[in-house]
Image 1 (cartoon, rainbow, N blue to C red):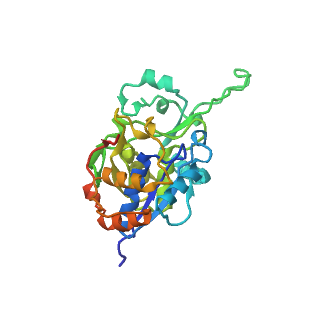
Image 2: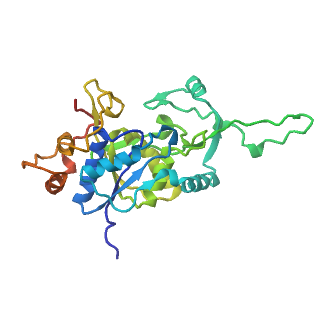
Image 3: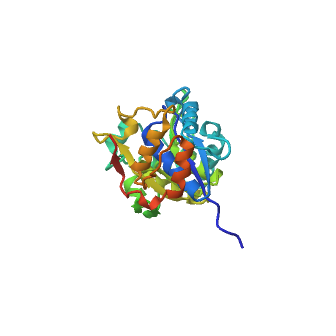
Length: 315
């Protein structure tokens, strides 16, 4: 008889800039939950989208985490070194006839979409109805003297599933109809880069992640990831989505002019602010170092105190 699977959480920043307060909130919540449950906490650098990566940002983020008293288990996983694993997962889905190539541009999607969801136009399945290359009879040399150059195409997943639901440990029950609210979504972009939804599912399984604590902006991504987990035969972690930090104008802090980097030279003020933002009990002690903060905080952390809302203003 086997016992419960040990807790394994993770923090997965994208190196598109320095660590800001909104990302710190996610780091504090995921770290506190993992350590308070005597679990492991891993760091993954989601540097798959190399064109958006800021040189030096990955090292700066890790330096800031260390300055704030975070310690992670094992080496940092870099998505940029995992493309073979993503390609293998995509090949498996293609073997199951669950994918198809798509050459539609964003302009074409906007013009043909019958509905618009929170993330933009919902893909209407135009290329899903296109005959597969193997079904098209080859043209004779006489009828096609000039080779046809096919432009790069994205690869989409055929979404054919009833509504998916999951219980979020902060937000409660979430239900999403992927067919009507999302549509067939991209697994590999036209530029050859694998999409976030596929990469994160493959990496969570590879790292043995049991529980994911992250920002509420990713709540709507979770059903897509759950579907991919099922199709690939991978385990589904538990989920908890924390409120996002907004500035005074209601903008997500990571996209706001107010999103100044947290200061690794003076970490305590931002740590205490993140702790209060997550509605945790006052620590009631004079703290001098991040180590002292964590020594008191981990005994008092309670995920149930985090409010079940998607956003909160901080400035």
